[in-house]
Length: 524
Image (tube, rainbow, N blue to C red; front, side, top):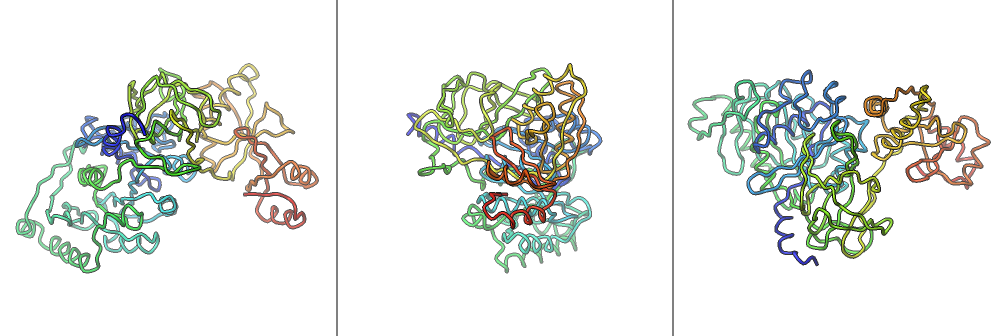
């Protein structure tokens, strides 16, 4: 147990570390800004004017994100609210960046799922709900964009339960249908809060509490409808149960509009009150690591060149136990080698500040930690190893080349950087050699990010030759020899870990070959 165990346990109890996740365009970056606005750590929300002007979005630091109006990488923000330390991780929503989102989910204690009131549950939303359930991550659901036309509130609850298996338990309930939003009733207290967008929409919403009599006089039929729906919810037992929520069996539901800052204060307060704090985490071998044990943590993200003024690489470490102190010497669990944490920072979008200490639940940015890779464990006490981070089999493959021979060193350095960050997987093909590595991706937009960053950050213009493969499966030396005799199949080596991957044009081809060679190893 750590010498400062009581203090560490208290600090861990003050942390709320969660991810904002959703289908693309549901409003994740807008919600991230709105939460930071309510905590008064930024002066105005930067996303409220829509996708055409995102330069103010704190969590979208990459120029490509600002230009295209999408989040293509995750971001970490920390701020204080009501004596609680909030560690908020914004994630990309596009399915092409699923790996980045799922890695972030290993570093959080809960999640806020955004649903578009007009679109309901979309394919990526369902996948994310399922991942959270598999990892026992408690999920709060915020039904967003209630200031625009959308589905019926009760119908959305039915859809959540039918398609996710989680029982929705509304904590707030809207007065007024989607597109005609007056405010919300807090189901636990019965208090109605009228909400109105601030002039310009960049500041906190205007709120006014009313009793039932005043609300009925003001909003008439809309109040009567909401009252009937609240009675129905009470009769069906759709009430919040903290134990069921923490067990990832129910999902508390709130309503609002992040772009207008409506309902965001209620969400932030309920996160502080109900979301789980940092707690013991499972290890590869042995019991869970308690928060008051000596320092330990793991790398869940690596990012380079976040700010043109720095041109450095940052390894994001989730602190799991103990007290982190800048400059402390820790061990790399994989190699056993010592590692010095001299350059430790707290990242707030593009902003960064040196930090001297951190506690379980916090995210520390270790600068220029080139010896670290995604999934690596660091510790200061007895040996501890956290589980490996999830990875996804690639489905898209392309040879990347540059015609500028003078830029080849920069080209190689850029490819190594993108591979280390997990932007793409990099494969080596014997028949093409080191000058033409193969990029492997879950989705084609990863190629766009890779080529954009090679040009923007390394000054290298590249072109891609797409390969006709859709399936990758791990094999071995014996499998490589067997597959040499097969057409339309290629075996490559993944640079990151040396794994051999057999690439096939489609699943039917892979099954056909596997049927002819019973001893052929194909894991995929």
